[in-house]
Length: 305
Image (cartoon, rainbow, N blue to C red; front, top):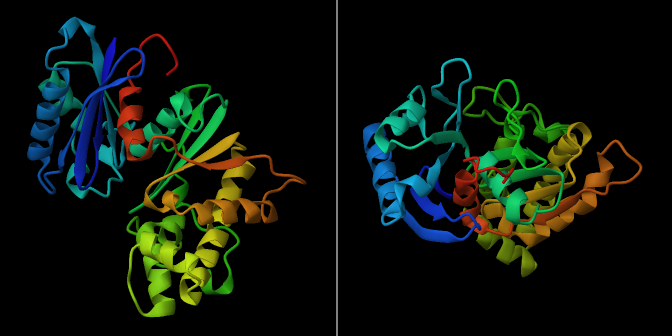
């Protein structure tokens, strides 16, 4: 059966219909109505209607929605979303009513991990940890083709743990929007990398430009990426020590800096509690389509993915 995926982001909403064979149909993208909850619901409903136009209703299994937050197991309301107009809202209930199709709502990083585990860079591995490094830092766990959410629906939320083994200048760390200090997100998000480079160079540029300048040998850019890669290795070492995944798949804007992934891989053994590290660190296959493809795969269709 066909499955519909929706990736609800802070700046854009993307939707597609995924065939039983995993082929895409009608991948669409529009700007998110920022700050407008009812407008967001209407936009999602309109995108889904366009995706399934012409498909027999009986052949549509349902709609999966990835969001920049999660649903509270206690209340069913959205929590922890940096798209703050979603917080405290009954998004699942309201979408279910508008779409009249089975709906599943899950964290967008979990959707990313599910997509890459199904037919992306993590395909064929038993335990996949997916990390998204962009405006924020998220993570998702997939074991044997299934998302592992955990009892509190917090599985994979590595970005809001403290950076492990902090150096003197990393403690206590910057304030985080979650109310704590020194979260991994404050060190490894895209904006954090920009701030680190600006502190060295006096100039604010995006991650892509920092990478280009490092490739050209600029000292400030090289130093910023070296520090960033060291922090990445420390942060991922704690994931390996606890979860010990077969593979870690990178997504988000910073994942496009190949040197960061390679350098973090080199440094990882320095903090992993083992005499060897066989874990692979790899870039995603599906790019910014992973989230919406994974959202579609939230809908169970008789197979794990």
